[in-house]
Length: 139
Image: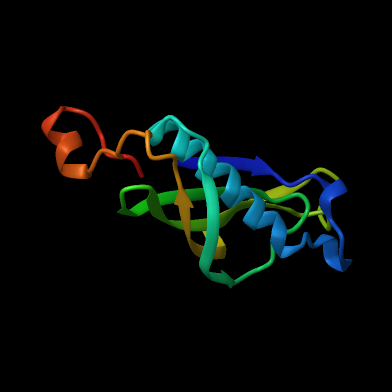
C-alpha cells in the first residue's frame, strides 16, 4: 500500500524547515490503517514498532511517499515493513515556489511494526493465493 503527501510549511517545527520524526511515523500509521482496511476489513490497532530508523530529514515543501508491506500474517496480527521516501524537495534558493524532483528519491525513514485485527477479520491473501485467483497480492 502506498500513500503520497505534500509536507506543508505549517508542519515545520525546527530550523531548516525540518519536521519532527513523528511526522513520518504518523504517515506510517495512516498507510497501515489503509492496508488493514483493504486486507482485513478493519482499521486495526498498531500494537508497536520493533525497529525505527531515521535516515534522512523530512522537510516542509517535501513530497513524501510511504509504503507498507505485509511481511507476516498471524491469526490476529500482521507484521509490516514501512519506508518513507522524499520524492520532491522545495528549492527556495531558486524562487519561492521552486522545487526539484529527487532522482533517486531519498529514503528518510524505515520501520517495522505489528498491527492487530479483531478475531473476526478475514485473513490477508498471500501472494500465491492471489495469483491463483487471478488477483494481485497486497504490498
